[in-house]
Image (cartoon, rainbow, N blue to C red; front, side):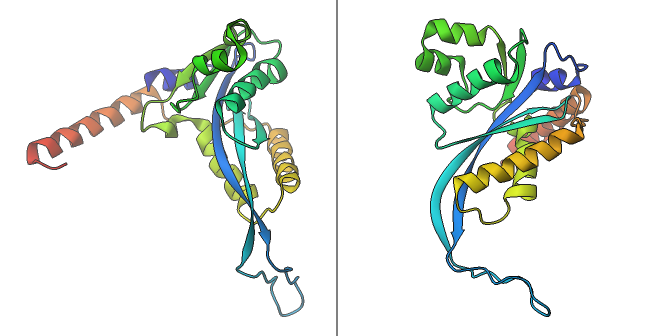
Amino acid sequence: MKDVVTLYAQPYDPARPTVCFDEQPVQLLAEARAVRPLKPGYPRRRDYEYVRCGTRNLFLFIEPKAGQRRVLVTQRRTKEDFAKAMRYLVDEMYPQVPIIDIVLDQLNTHAPETLIEIFGKAEADRLLAHLLFHHTPLHASWLNIAEIILSALTRQCLDRRIGDEWTLVMEILAWEYRRNAEHHPVSWSFDWKRARRFVRDHERRQCAKTITGQN
């Protein structure tokens, strides 16, 4: 926890960006019947039935101190997809940056070994020379700012039926462009002092449960 919280507290350095990464599945849902449009005296009406059109995966990158977001839509969420996302981060998003601090959770694919398995050692070493992984603790993925941004993306853009990948991509691009144009950095107030108090209080609660025989 200290590693991630301390990283967030560092001043903004464009030569060494801190980037948070997370992923989320999205179900494509089409209308089973035509939506009835608005008209005087009647709201827009939609049938409760829908058609499942498969799923897609979202990879989200957020540089919180710069307020910049990037979302990749993929067919799946495999080791290969993760490795290609890391290569995209290094070669396309920050090609001139020597080191990128990347925050991610402890999913089994989120490891340097994944890049070696997919690309081979030579290419993996090239990419890993620019990446410094910072994993959130187990059961504390909420420390990953990307998880918070994915929640915002879902509420602001995806909280409705989207039936095909093209529409999904276009809607996400519009959201991404609008939010990036605002250049609003993420305000993170959970510092190491608060984190220590949080951990201490949690340990006290666990100790009290042990003493009283609770599970």
